[in-house]
Image (cartoon, rainbow, N blue to C red):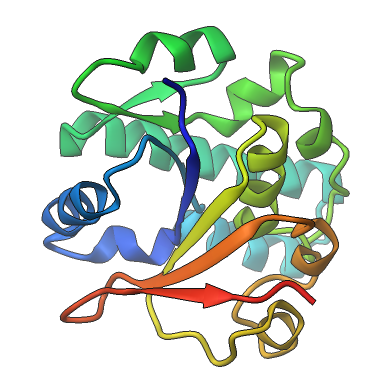
Length: 198
C-alpha cells in the first residue's frame, strides 16, 4: 500500500541531535504509510542570502533551493536508517512493504515528468518547501499533509499562519482540500494540531 500522508520536515530540524529518535517515534505513532519531503534548511537560507546580494536569476535560485531539499533527503536516507530516497512512482512502490519509509528527492522527481502541480509552481521565494510538499501531495493523490516544524502554530488557520510567516505566502493557494496538521517536533511531547484551510 502506498503512502496516505505526506510529512513535510522543516529543514531547521536537521540540527536536532536526537532527530532520528524523534522521527522514529513520530512514524510509529502515526501508524500509516508516509512520504517524507524535507525542507532546504540552512543551505536554502544561504542561497536566499546570496540571491539577495547578487540578484541571481530567480529560476536558478529556486532550482538551487530545491537541490538543497534533495541533498537533505539523501542525507537523511543515509544517516537515519529510516528512509529510502525515491524520485519516481515506481521507486515509491518498491519501498512499500519494506522496513523503510520513502523520502522524496524533489530535484530528481521534477525531472521525471510526474510532477504536474509541483512543476507549475512559480520560481519565487514566495514558494518554499511547504508549498512544494502540498503540491507533492496533490501530485501523488494524497489528502493528508503534516507540517513538521520547530515551533507551535501561531494560529489554526492557513491564511493567518501564512500572514504570520509560519508558512509561505503561496501555501494558501495550493492547500486545496488537504487535511493539514502541524507538529512541533522540538516539543518535549510532540502532538498533532489540526489546521483549517480558509
